[in-house]
Image (cartoon, rainbow over all chains, first blue to last red; front, side, top):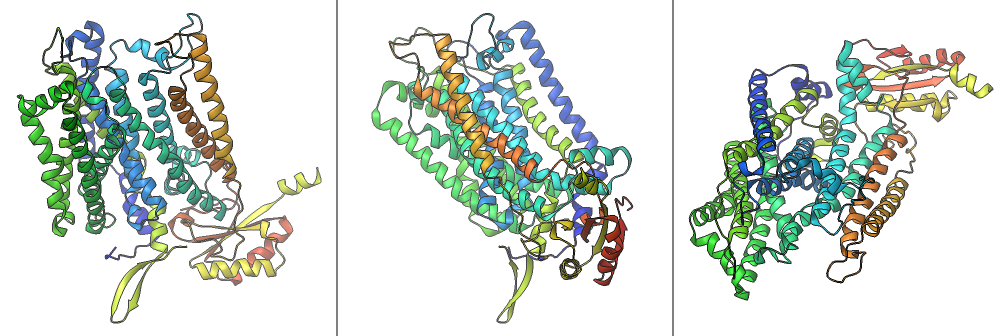
Length: 458
Length: 180
């Protein structure tokens, strides 16, 4: 970190709790629009429940469409929190401090969006979901089939959701105490209960510090398992031959990190623009996450390249049928080119320039491009995978998402952003105590004729 | 019975300091004045390195909690996957009823979920939360001042106040202070 601004604890409280104690002018309108988008999706969902899954564009053989694309996409975004928060926390990277909370909250809301995208919408008969997953139907003696990925999926996603939510809540307790101390009346009572009577003793701080590291270490293996299991939804099924790939689990994980860390970078810029956190999220932070993104993106591209090499090297009919669709058929070929450019060929060369990495606008544009590309990547794995023509296939067709599906996809985006905005109204998006801790351990030191900022830690 | 009534009769006083050094001096002075380490504590609005104020390093047993949780989660995962497959024994492709690779996935998630739930319970328990009575506390602590709280018998309160004042406390309050 090259920039050094020493702030008092009061200044930090004033800046970071401003969104909790006041209502920004843009907040009610934005929240209402997002809520309306979500309600439109909910209405579409109600219509689908009433009329049946025939109102979607799903058919034979396109049994998976944008619901599953969206599910995989949101699971990918959810890897943001853990990648940024847990790994940077474990490695004691100083630049993590202002972005961990937002990344963790992004994880929680994107996981709820993922749950909306698949178990709630895709399965058709939603009222049966619970007894596919939980062993409670004693009367009929029907038990979950643990051999099915559709049981692995909820167990992994629910574990990840519970873990991420508890991670956010535990790290929130000291900040709730600050809000309690600044509040009056009913708000004070509510936050007094929420912060569990936090006082800030050395014991409580010690446990809070250990908790961050310990929970990070525990959530990381779950993080690895979640997207592996999502990839096995594809890899272990009998259908599309092109999905039977041993590389799918690591390929999906690194793709999720690529998309998730990009989403965190986008959110960082939005936090600066919308909440004015310019003092806390500086070009240095964008520079750091930009460098991380280059490494992640190149690793992802390597896996993508390997996946194609293995696919083409075998010259198997099923593989070639899907690859042919992906590249030479309209509209998939055009989408494939768009995907390659947005996910890799435009952002990564741009990130090599320091000016781009340190620019709020450029980082916003490039990271949005990555997520457009990564959504398309999932679309291009799934849809050409299920509609490819195989030997002795008696039906084939194409897939066009219906307006119902499009509304429900938009609803998941609306829900995630709505959740973030509502969260920001009640809780600080930047961990106040973490930023303060960073300030305590910061100073400027003189080396020869230069004075440089330094961070001191145990 | 006597010790319970002693605890119930205890009173607390809080001194607020603006610097780490003056708070550390206050702790030294309290120790020299005959107060036991368990009778005083530092309250801060931000974490400091262990021993910044000369206080004892807090001991905890948090690392036991995830191990216990993991063991419980593993057992539940094993029981759940075994019982559901045996209760609905579908033979697939002539393979054994108990599909171990599939069971491992659920058992793994169960183990991790158990470990995480117990860790969170452990954090709350070891942090001595929830705390129903705040004792001596001031909202100024989260604004940057450092509090030194002394909780002891009523007859020792006057002495504690004198020590805190002598060490440069900017403000001294008794019991809970909720003023701004």
